[in-house]
Amino acid sequence: MIILSLTRIIKFSLQNFARNIWLSIVTITIIILTLFSVTSLIFINAIMDEAVKLVESKVDVSVYFKPVTTAEQIFAVQTNIQALSYVEDVKYVSKSDALDKLRVQYNDSPLILESLKELDNNPLGDTLVISTYETEDYQKVVDILNATPQYAVLIDNQNFDDNSYVINKLENIASQITRIGWGITLFFALISILVIVNTIRIAIYTHRDEIGIMKLVGASNWFVRGPFVFEAIIYAFIGSIVTFTLAYLVANFSDPYVVGLLGPVDFTVIDYLNSNILYIFGLELLGIVVISVLSTWLALSRYLKV
Image (tube, rainbow, N blue to C red; front, side, top):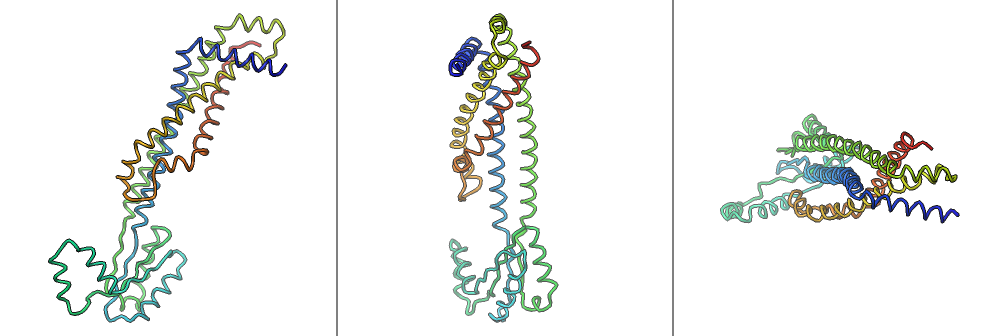
């Protein structure tokens, strides 16, 4: 009996879907726009997060020691700085390594390379490259180096690659994009509710005689509501499948541009999508099904007298 009832509900839903095919297409299109706006927002946030991480990875404090500074003195500074809770790593670069990097850096400048060969002694000093967990902690390291006399007499110069302005700018842009994106998503979600409600209202009006007959022969409220609820679920599933396909097409199309923007990093939109596919489309499908069912229930409660 239950199987027979479910079969009739599904058959009734599919018939109504086909009879109002253009209205069904409009409803599905609105659902696709809603889901795709959410998916696009997720993609943009992932790219912006990767851009911020990329800039943060290039921020550090380089401390250049005077050539007369001994290795023991440098290692003592390294140990003390490394002990700070907000310092992630302190890397030691010897003067010979620094000179080798300089030669590599100016490999295409024969004049500079020739000048380096003329040097009798290495003019560079040893270096400590300091990284912190948070970008705002770099200034703390600089303040300690400047305020500690035993450090100041050893240090020739220090270079703080301060990209905090760029990081803050990227974070602000990401925040604004998120707000705008959620505003667009909310707009399409409200439109979806209105469209689904009106679609179900039309379906109820079209089948008003059939509904009356079903009630006269003793059909339960759930049996009457079932086809309309299932029809709304069909809209949600078709919209989700189309959005899923579009998301993969957009990810494949945009990846070359993302790589060009971020450079050689271990991030692509398609990899991010594959890694979070259940999270992204699972929640989107659940959300749009809930919206569709609630919209249908609203239409039935208001216009269907059972």
